[in-house]
Image (cartoon, rainbow, N blue to C red):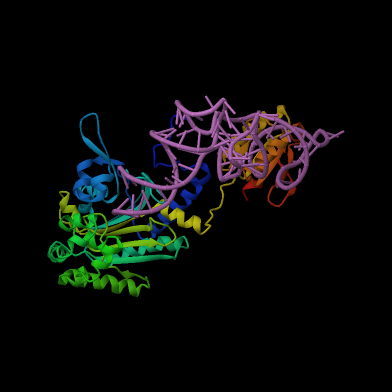
Length: 416
RNA sequence: GUGGCCAUAGUUCAGUCGGUUAGAACGCCAGGUUGUGGCCCUGGAGGUCGUGGGUUCAAGUCCCACUGGUCACCCCA
């Protein structure tokens, strides 16, 4: 086999597509109840949209983007996440002019050029939502509650909600400077990666998974102790509302997340059933992004979740979705009756019945086996005898019962 | 980008110390007395042993390279 799919991409085969459809349907249902409307943006954008929004120094922009030069010489990139495109569309289409708060969701493929592993693909799928136009902590909580609700809909309760506040343009720089100074004093003991980050993004040092780093930075100042009044009040209110709603959470002052645009609330949903890539979903507030991309200053908050990772948890839980089944399989007992079966199959289909028939000129036994394999609910064998009588035996493959039906009333007989 | 492990039928895997026509299970196909599935029985099809080189009288088996997969690191969904 010379032509194969690109590394880190996967086919969603007929055997699992119904599972995907079911998952998407449940997700859409929750978004609908929260009154979020779908937005579909292009799969690729000008590279600068992502580098400017996600941040030049992030891993995503620095080493994970699928970037190409197109025939006109423009640098374009397959979207690595959803928020940048949504905000671009929000600005470009003046969505904020029609209403003060825009609530949208997406279910879409994303692309990052990394080495694949369990729970990580180069093309993967996310659902996510953005509430653009509201500065209130209530909106943060709606987003968080909605994400948690989706997992609950699938019977997944075994996840941890971690939240933090990363401050705003006023208190974060101040905290970063304080932290940087502190980190300098132990710089030579930190891991190489962390040393590099002291300058560029000291908060990511705290987020390091290196055990030595963790021990060394244990008593470093926490951002939650250095928020300004506004951020602190906001964070308190988020925690208060989550508590009132009965949504369990843990405050993780080290939580930073890999995108630069977050302000105030940042959160993450993790599962311990996932192995190394444990993040189910993540999100936060991004009050400065719209302005950063050339729009009016507009507060916003959102989240994104990995569908493959949700699928992995569902599989661990032996979650099954009902199979899609034909209501009827029309079998031909002899060659002369095949004309009738194929025409009738088409007629019944246009009347709304899911019908399958034989296309391989197979023996009756083979047709029966096919009906069984397709999980057809009923089968009717039609031959010269039935066509003459205008009646046939309708067999229910689930309870193995037979009954006589008029051929003209087949649709009613199997639809009920 | 770095590292560990792996690569034999459609799938999951056996394959001894290197030795003759590479096996099993499941799946697939066909039969098991005139026209009724699932279970059972019988038979059948299906493999360039990932690719290329090397060692050897002899390589699925040993060595090297490459490719692919997988898991982990970094980071994230």
